[in-house]
Length: 248
Image (cartoon, rainbow, N blue to C red; front, side):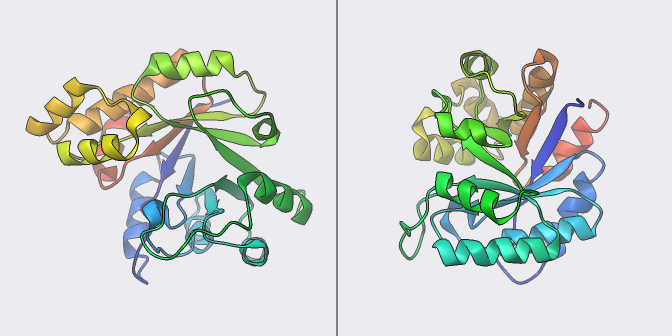
């Protein structure tokens, strides 16, 4: 199987898909698939199903992320119906970050979302997110797994060895756009363990985060332990494309 690059798109917070189309066009020759977040970091964005449809209209493959935080059972069934009407058939189900406004619903779990999607259509392919800890048994029933972002290849390899599965597994790689971005991420996710030397480099070199992410992608590929990476380029997708295009 070819090493897969799944690029995450920054979904719009306004009713304008111009920036989405630019990301798709820029990364289209590099990405095997595009992952579209669902109200990521607790902000309202254009529907991930709608953006996934836009990806497919531009000739790409898409994975629509859906979180349990923002929907009840009826809402999930609506989204699955909409996805089926649009021809969107791959999903990543997640719990969801803390919302910036409103409350979290408690009607669904990721496990129940997977079960509901399976019952809705056997043609749907559903994935789950995995932290760097023992993998729950029920997540082994997913069609693919996205492992949390890590800046340590050794940590990823230890997790992979301890959690053998027979489905595609994609390791998370994130571009740190700035020193401030790195510090905010470390404060929000204490166990992400960003190397202090990388944070220092970001203070004087705006390309340090791009270079570190691209190097991590190539190290993960060369390890042979993963089927691909889930790359989060944030706003630096042009820089990432120019550096990875020739290497992959």
